[in-house]
Image (cartoon, helix red, strand yellow):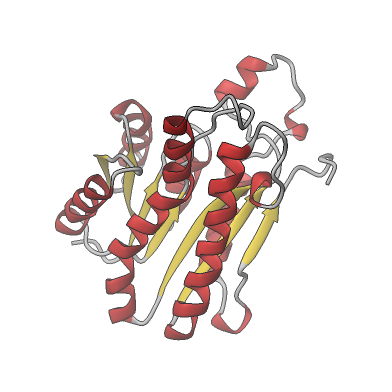
Length: 237
């Protein structure tokens, strides 16, 4: 069993990977949770190649049984997570009359319900230890329901409410729950492919964001952050 474990649900080539690498550099064993091995394999190989420990587990954040089974594997192989980051999400653009009920429900589950499913898996051990960190990744849509963004905004609004409720319930018991508002596009291969030649300064750096997540975990209990917004300096808000 590892002494320190971080679990990241929603690992891709951007923020999830950067968070995993950042915590691995601090000696954490990393549980890499995502729907596809294609998302987790490069990160696992990079961490292991640097002498770290990583476990990749296929996980469907929208399925409570899948999430429970994934954390069973994490606990068996690594131990109980000291830190949990929820970074999963789904986006379907469309007007209220255009979206299918199935698409709406899928986005709501990915953007919020999955965090609830996972929280139920990590909180008992954190309570027993009297400490732990839970970070939930939100978006601009956590604060603003723009036209044709209802499938995203509804779930992100709900995730923010979940973070507030969880923080008020478990903060006094030593567990730091925090919600991040990611206001802008993250610099990922997909985004760069959509806008070749775009200046990197107009996008959020995954590594810089991961550093912010690490600092959230390191905060002293006398000065905890409930909500942190991150955006490029040139982003209007």
